[in-house]
Length: 228
Image (tube, rainbow, N blue to C red):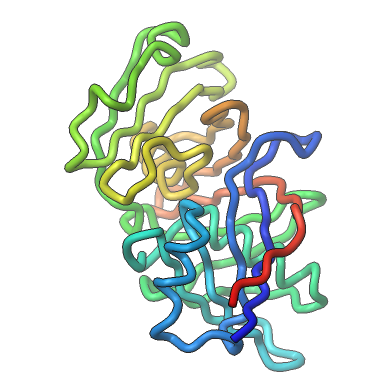
């Protein structure tokens, strides 16, 4: 078995720097029972397996795996898969994941998904007083039985925040850019945000009082890997 994995970085800054690595795989090339093994071997925070849509279709199906488990929904894999499909001449309007149907849109050089805020997993939200306090936080000092989202304002008036995400329970000590966490913090604050996470990744969100959040960002391709 020779599996081609496209390696993306999702939620880069506008210059293509930073971003969270993602493996994207054509699901038809992998038996369902092999998906977890491949995601574990790759070691990315998530790998997404995409069923390519039929010609003329505007929806696709996908399954998302961390190194240790399958997820019903995640932000950076769905944004990355939507970008990957358009790059392959298969732009979509919706993406079906186990949690339900994700709305997809393409605006200028950003790819966006829109999903119910309730799909984002629960985690501990830590409201910090300064960027310095955020930078000094040590993932090892936070319990590993729950996920931790640390954030602080950098420009409250314009909705700019700085954030970090610790996900030891999914074998990811610190996630560089987390779309589902962006959904949760946007709903928590009930306003549109520009989030700088990790070393400098950028996530743009739009809040809806109906309980939906749009998450958008830039994506770049770092090439391909082949697994036996």
